[in-house]
Amino acid sequence: MLEKLFSLGYSKTFAERYYQLWGERAVKIAEAMEKPLPRCFRVNTLRIEIPKLTKLLNKKGFQFKRVPWAREGFCLTREPFSITSTPEYLSGLLYIQESSSMYPPVALEPQPGEIVADMAAAPGGKTSYLAQLMKNKGVIYAFDVGEERLKEMRLNLSRLGVTNTIVFHKSSLYLSELGIEFDKILLDAPCTGSGTIHKNPERKTNRTLDDVKFCQNLQMKLIKVALENLKKGGILVYSTCSLEPEENEFIIQWVLDNFKVELLPLRYGEPALVKPFGIKLSEEIAKARRFYPDKHSTSGFFVAKIKKLE
Ligand code: SAM
Image (cartoon, rainbow, N blue to C red; front, side):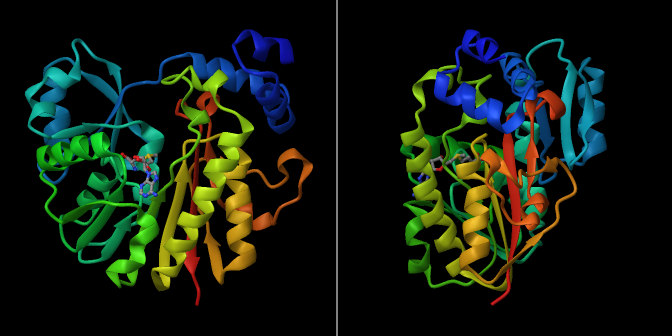
């Protein structure tokens, strides 16, 4: 069992951790992560209605099925040539997006006219979905520190026709400098990315427990800033593409222990882990959700929806 994980290239530390977390299923998860993910896209309803675009693509021979948790999301089942070379892609009628990444904006449910922060935004996949759900009305304050990723983000936002977003090349640890109480905040946190091995196989070997600790530390700082800048009754969605409980369930447990908040239920995905590594967490944590490559054909992904009570 552990040998199988070693043969797939996992270090002893991570193979043992994954076996502790999922038992035999750890191999299924790891094997699923060796296969490429289906290519998925989001219809950009800022530019076109869903049936109009699906018809245009069908005519060219593309076939796809719906993403269950995202009205605008589809995954290709037939791609006669690269969808990125179509005029539909080039003119911003669609955005290529992994299906689990579509869930955080849907879970946040931003409304037209609201004031929203996206605390780790580049290259803008989720920001542009937020803008779409807000019908370009209201304001999104989008932060990131990655210069190259921000360049890509500006191109994406312009191609997609997003006009309600202000992009800051700045750490969102300084969010309070804006002096705004946000209606909603998305924190798609920087993480070890251990759920994205299919795209980044080197992560099997080059990530250590120190990296997990480093990310956890930053995530705690960022989520604290998020809660401090949210209005009372406001909603925070926290997500990562990490498999590690330290970056997911343990962060949410820390929030439940230190802030006046309520965890809100989410419909899709599997319940988050309530006893990772045998450590008993609050039963509430099961309301947060995990997506798994072996079950959902997605990256390993985590989403939690938090309401600020006071
Ligand atoms: N939400 C993006 C999307 O859907 O396209 C992906 C975001 S990625 C998971 C995490 C991002 O966090 C990276 O772009 C990284 O540059 C950014 N980041 C890291 N530290 C940050 C900080 N202190 N403030 C803002 N962004 C940060």
